[in-house]
Each structure stands twice: as structure tokens, then as C-alpha cells.
Image (cartoon, rainbow, N blue to C red):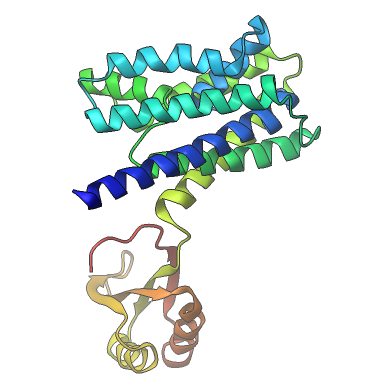
Length: 280
């Protein structure tokens, strides 16, 4: 019981930090430079520009009804954490803009898009990792996906794209939409970094005619790294060829290349990021 309470407290603390960071990215970088983002912050920025209503008020007005409507699709714990996240983001945004009246940290749109996107990505990543949602299109997408054949991920991308492209019509300059796209891209990278972590391993595919020789030298050099040898034939000639698939630390990639060059100059090495690893 104590473990569950501790875990839940850590989640709420993580949501608190994530919400404040997200709000800082929106209010100190995006809003002053007429840049929007995906999700509820993006919608709030656009509506605020027209109405003058505070961003926090708009976020609450959009998100709380969505959470209430989606209660039967999401668990009670997830719903409570999501409501907490929404309240933290809204209150932090209004505190920065309305109460403290903090000035913009930059008037350069490029810097605003980059650093605003980074903070939003970090904030959303922390919130999602704590088993909650910052609200917005993710809730709408979940509800639509539950009742249709559409995939939730595709719906989120479509709704975010609609919000960002709207910036080109709402703000005086078309540049706002372009900078918004930059910010959204950086936010997505930040979210992936928090949820998946910085890739510390690489996946190597080695096509070779001397697979057994390479296998022996790789085992001697690298030790017990994860790997497998696959049998196959080339597409054009039909010659038999073997494919070694290895998962190695980043700092061992060069060693693998050197071994392949030394013992099979005709071998082909393909290096890929192992962004998510599960299992043993």
C-alpha cells in the first residue's frame, strides 16, 4: 500500500513539474512571437489572440469538458491525473502572463520556436510518462478512435496539423505557421526523448559471405552482445548470403565496422537507432 502511495505521489510531482515547464514554453517563447503549437496550448493561443481571454481560462474551458466526456473510456486514476495536469498547466500559464507578467525570453521567432518546442516537448513527455495526459486532441482522438476505424495516432497528427496551419490565417504573417511547424517538430522530438530515452544502442545488419568468420571475431571482440544470424538469398542473383543482426552499444559500432572491413571487404553494414528496446 505504501509503495502505491509513493508511486502516485511521484507521478503527481512529475506532472506538476511537467505542467510548469510546458506552460513556460508556451507563455515565455510561443505567445510573444505569435507562434502556436499542437494540442490545447495551440488552440488557446489562437483563441486568446482573438478574444483576449487568458490562456489558462481557455485551456480549462476546452479540456475539462473533454475529460468528463471521456471518463468511461479512461480509468479513474488516469482521469484524475489528467485533470491535475490540466489545472497545473492552466494556472501556471496565467500566473506567468497575468500575475507575474513575465517578459518574453526572446523576440527572435527561431529561438522562440526552438526553445518553446523543447520545453513543451519536455513538459508533455513528463506528463505522459506519469500516466496522464495534458489534454486536447489526444482526448478527442481517443474518443473518435474508440467509435471508428481511425487510428488514434493518425487523428492526433491530423488535429495538431489543423491547429498549426490555422496560425497562417490567424496571425498577421504567414511566417507564424512556418515557425509553428518548427516548434511542433521539436516538441515531438522532445516527447520521444523523454518517453524512449536517448538511444544508447544501435542495431547493425551485416550482409556477408563470411558470416561464420565474422561471428567468431565479433564474439571475441565484443563479448556477449545480442545477435542472430539469418539465412537468405540476394534479390538479383539468387546467391546464398547470410545476415547478421546485432544490438551493440554506440561506442562499439566502429569496432564492428573495422572487423567487417578486415575479414569481409564485400560485406555491407547497415546501422540503425535502437530507439526502443523491450525484453531480455
